[in-house]
Amino acid sequence: MRHLLSKFIFILPFFVLVGCKKNEQAETQKPEIAKNSIEYASGLSIVKHEGYSVVTVSNPWPDANKSYTYVLKEKNAKVPDSLLSYASINVPLESVVVTSTTNIPFLEMLEVEDKLVGFPHTDYVSSEKTRALIDKGAVKNVGQNEKLNIEQLIELSPDLIVTFGVDNNNPMLDNLKKSGLNVFIQADWMEQSPLGKAEWIKLYGALFGKEEKAKNLFDKIVDSYKQTQKLIADKPATATVLYGSMYEDVWYVAKGNSWVAEFMKDAKANYLWSDLKGTGSEGLSFEKVLVKAKSADFWIAAGSFKSLDEFGKSNPHYTQFDAFKSKNVYTFEGKIGATGGIVYYELAPSRPDLVLKDFIKIFHPDLLPSYEFTFASKLN
Image (cartoon, rainbow, N blue to C red; front, side):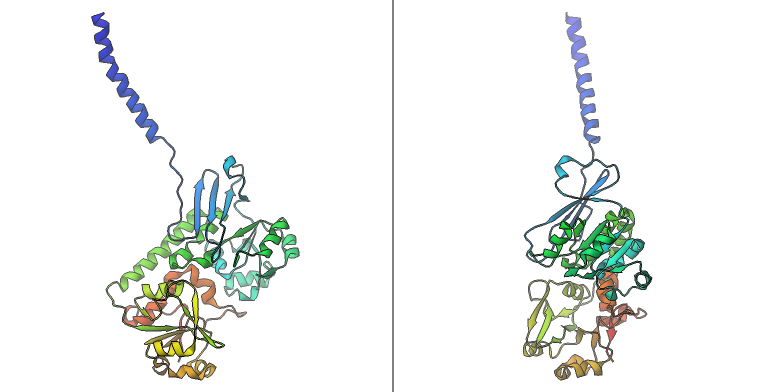
C-alpha cells in the first residue's frame, strides 16, 4: 500500500504538468480575434474573417441617426447566422457604379477602373485614364447624384452602386434598394483627417479582392505624409493664412477641425480661423473677414482663377487685403480636366501627401526648392 501511495505521489505532478502543458498549448492555439484593419478613418471599420469581411460605416452624414453594416462574402464562404440580417455583397466585384469623383483614384490605384460601368455627371471626371473609358462608352452617364437614372441602372445591373447620403432623408437611396439594386453607403467625404480620407482605399481593396494591394498603397501614402511632416518638425507656424472667397454675399471660411484646416496645421501655418470649432465651413460677412485677415501673409482662395487680375475683377474688395497687394494668393482649383472637372476635388482626398507638399511649398518654399505644385497655383 505504501508502495502504491509513493507511486501515486510521484506520478501526480507528472499528470498535473502534462495537463498544464496541454492547457498552455490550447491557449496558444486559440484562433486570433479578428481586428479592425482601419487606423485613421473615423467612420469606417473593416474586419476580415475566413471567407468574408464585415464592413461598418458609422458616420454616413452629418448628425446621422444610423450606421450601416455590410457583409462582403467570397464565393462558397459560410457566414454566421448572427450576420445574416445585414446586407450581403458578393466579392470580388465584377462591375460597379460610383457616384463621387473622389472614388475614381481609388479604382485606378487598384487597377480596377475597367470595372466601372456608370457614373453621374461624367464631365466632372478629369482623370485621363477613366476619361478614355467614358469617351469610348464603357462608362455610362447615369444622371445626377440627387436623381440617378434608376431605369438605366437596372439595365446596367452593376454588382454594386457605391453612393452617399447627405442627411437622414434619402428617398433616392430607398428607391434604389426597392428596385433590387445593391447599394453601399460610403462616407469618405465626412472624414476630416487627411490620412483618414485616404484610408478609404481599403474599402475598395475589400470590394475587389485587393486588400493587400490597398494596404501597401496606403502605407506608402502614410510614409510619404509623415516623411514630409519631418521636414517642418522644427519650423514655427509664423505665416498667417486667409482662406476662401466671397460667394454672393457670404464668405465661407473652413472651420478649425476641417480637412483644410488640418492640412494647414500639419504644414506649420497659422490659419486665422483655427480656433473656430467644428468641421465644414462657416459663412461670414466680408467686413468680419477683412478685420481679421487684412494683414494675412498668404491667401488660399476658392475658385478656378488663372490670374491675380482676373481674381481681383471678380470682387473689387479683394484688393484691400495685404496678401493680394503682395501677390501671395494661391488657388488649389486652377487645374481643370478636359471636360471641366477640377483635379483637386478628384485626386486630393486620396493623395494627402501631395496636398501637404503643396502647402509646405507655399508656406516654407525653401524646404522643397525643386518640388513642383501638384494642385496649387500662384495667381500672378
